[in-house]
Image (tube, rainbow over all chains, first blue to last red; front, side):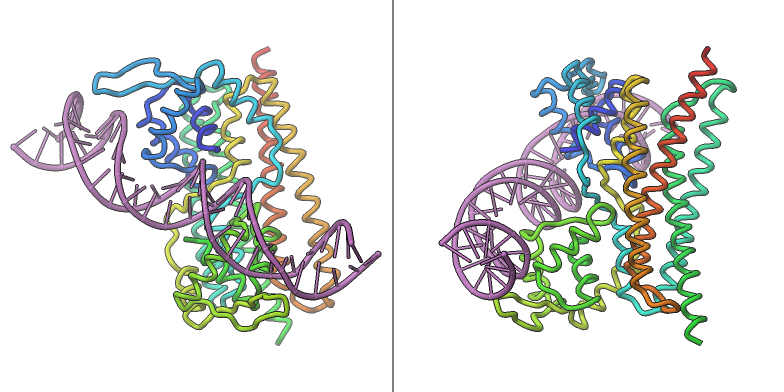
Length: 180
Length: 180
DNA sequence: AAGCCCATGTAACTGGTTACATGATTCT
DNA sequence: AGAATCATGTAACCAGTTACATGGGCTT
C-alpha cells in the first residue's frame, strides 16, 4: 500500500488538496517512483483521515479541502521509510522492453536500441535544463532543496539507460565483426 | 497489459511451462522490470491461448503444459516492442523512498541514505559476480547472450543508485559545513 | 514414509484504471 | 460568453495479491 506513503510524504512537505497531490504525483513521481490518478487519491485521503494519519486543515473557497499529515501520519511515514525493503518488486515498462530485446532479430534490436538511447538522452538533457533552472533560482551559497536531488536522480537514471543502450550497440557490433 | 508481453517475450526465447515462467519472472524480471505470481500467470496463459498468441506445444509427465508462442504472438510482441512508450508510468518502492527523504529530519536522512548506498552497493557487487560467472561460462571469442546484457543493466542500475546516494550525502555535508 | 520440488489451479480480496458526472472560478 | 483550470467525487471494470487446495514424482 505504497500510495498511502507517497501521499504522506508529499503532505509532510506541506498541506495540500487532493487536486494538488494529483498534479505533484504526476509531475514528480510518475516515471520513476509511483503513479496514481485523482480517482485513486481522493478516496485514499478519506481513508487516511479515517485512520488518523491525515486531517483536513483548511477548506478553500471553491469546496477544496486542504489535507495535512497528523503526528500519527508522520510516525507511520518514518516507520515505513526505515522498514526493511526486501527485494522490492518493481514495474517499469521501459525496462521490460530492454529485457525483451532478445526476442527480436538483430536488425530490429539495433533500431530499437538506437531509439531507446536517443529517447533516454533527450530526457537526460531535459532534466539537465530543469536542474539548471533550479540552481539559477537558488540564491548563491544557499543549499538547494530536495527538488534538486530528485532531478539529479532522474538525470542519472536516464543517463544510465542511455549509456547501457550504447554499450549494448557496441557489443552487438563487436560480435558482428568477430563473425566475419 | 504488460504481463502478457513479458510472457510472450519469455516464451519467444523458448517454450516453457507456467511453472518455469513463474520462476523466470521472479528471478530475472522482478526487481527491475515486472513481477507476477503463478496465480496471475496461469490464467493469463489460458487467455493468451484463447487469443491465439500462445499454444500448448507439449504435455509433460506430471500434468505440465509446455507453452510456445504462435506467429500471431510473435507479431504482437514485435508490435508492442516498437509501439511508442509515452512517459511510461513506473512503480518502484525503493525509488519512492528516495523521493520521500525530505520528510525526515537531517540525522535520519543521513542514516537512511547511508543504508541505501550500502544496500545498492551490495547488489551491484553481487551482479558483478553474476556477470563474471556468465563470462566464465561463455567460450572465449563467443558473443555472450542476453543474460549478460540484462545483468549489465542491473549492475549499472544499482551503481547509479549507490552513487546518487553518496552524492546526496556529500551535498548534505557541504550544506552543513556552509551553515557553520 | 516423509519431505521437497514440480506443477496447476480457483476464490476472495485489494489496488489501480477508465469512464462518467458535476460545478465553481479565473482568464481572455 | 466561452474556454481553461480548479476541484471533487462515484461506478464499472481490470490487474494483481494472498490464501486455499490438490496431486504427481523424486530423493533420502
